Image 1 (cartoon, rainbow, N blue to C red):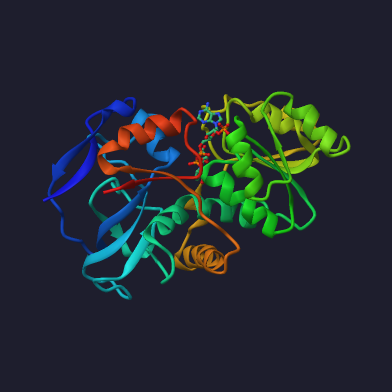
Image 2: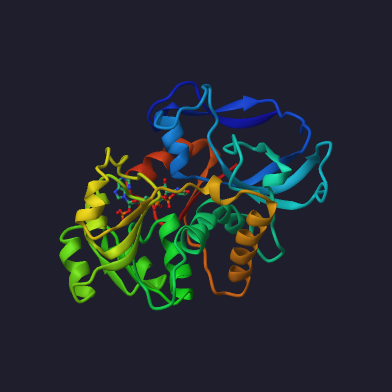
Length: 321
Ligand SMILES: NC(=O)c1ccc[n+]([C@@H]2O[C@H](COP(=O)([O-])OP(=O)(O)OC[C@H]3O[C@@H](n4cnc5c(N)ncnc54)[C@H](OP(=O)(O)O)[C@@H]3O)[C@@H](O)[C@H]2O)c1
């Protein structure tokens, strides 16, 4: 017997309930993992709410860390007792999860389960955004939104380590404190953003914007770019951006726009290991720190979703079975 969060149908946070389930055995290429911590992410909310279609009944959860308790056929390199994490799992809001061994990341000694559960999805996202979607160079000026969020705090630290100047946005003074602690050079509110960014960049604009807020920030993000700057739209925390006339890129200074997703930047085991080992190494060396802003018991998944949606959380949000 096990327990998992199950949504019978798409809807608000209230559709999430803890239910008894049976623990399946790992199939070919799979690991059965006793979940120590599951990451709560926006994709879980997009799926729960119906923005990203999934079959119901549905158990959310792409991200988790825990201990391998059974190994399926055809798996090399993992044994019972190993600690692993994944950001590409399914149904991780549970006491036990089946994960593909190919998508598992070995967790090094010295990294706690909570920290390990914070890295696969948000950490690897921050990593691919600034290393692969747009290779940020030392001395460049970058605008990121939601600087006290899960991705935001990691992104700012990685950008600073790469030598960038970071301008970020937050909605409250408490969040400003966190964003500054992560190393942001300038922390702004969302009001008057374009004129403030231009003032901070001598009227030039920033080299690149990483925008995970979406609908409410997209226009200001574009208007904050320098000529030939790049807009990386990577999320929709405030809602999806409406249809977009490409001619606007011409008028605004021959801009570039891209809309990446994590799966396309984790194409094989080598790419996963490159990103995750750089992140785990940075944590072990003290260069990168993970801020777990809130941990909820598994049964309180609905509350975790409600709080994330209402902008009440900062840093990583976890469920602990
Ligand atoms: N494309 C990818 O590969 C990928 C992978 C992972 C995550 N993402 C995206 O990255 C974004 C951030 O994810 P996260 O998990 O780290 O979340 P988060 O940043 O911890 O939380 C979202 C933050 O967005 C800001 N926000 C602004 N307007 C909002 C609104 N109307 N509703 C809710 N939040 C709003 C809030 O910060 P303030 O209150 O400070 O404004 C809020 O705390 C999400 O859009 C997510 O989908 C994309």
